[in-house]
Image 1 (spheres, rainbow, N blue to C red):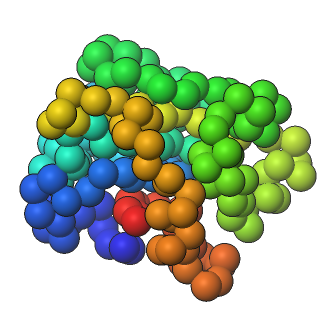
Image 2 (tube, rainbow, N blue to C red):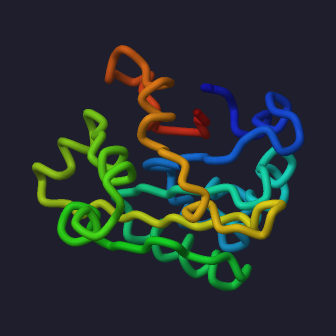
Length: 171
C-alpha cells in the first residue's frame, strides 16, 4: 500500500493487520513530540492502534542512528516490549534471529544496498503491540512468517517492494 500516512487507517478495519514494516523513514529530527515520525509511539497509539491486532509485530529498519535511537527510546517509554534491537543488522543481528526473520531482513532495497556499500550500518527494532487475545506472544504461535511473506512478495524488487521508502506496507 502506498498512500499518505495520514490516511493509512482508512484502508484497514479494526484488528485487520498483524504486522507492519516501517523502513527507511524520514527521521524528522525537529519533531520533538514524535507527531510526524511514523515510527513513534505517538503514531502507534493514534493511527496504527486502529487497525493492529493485539500482539502485532512492528518492524523498524533504518540507516539513521537518530531515528533508531528516538524510536527505541519512545518504545521503551511507552512500555512496548522490544523483541529484537540492533544497531547493525548485518553485523550481529542476522546471526541470532530465526531463519524466517533472517530471510526477511536480508531483503535489501536499492538504496539500502548503496548505503551498505558506503559503510553505513543498518539499524533494526522489532516490538510487539500488546499481547494477542489469547495472551500468547506472537513468536510462540508457531507461524511460519517467511512462508506467509513469500506468498505476498511482489514480483519485482524495485521501488514497489515491501520495503517502501515511506509509509506502511502490510502483508
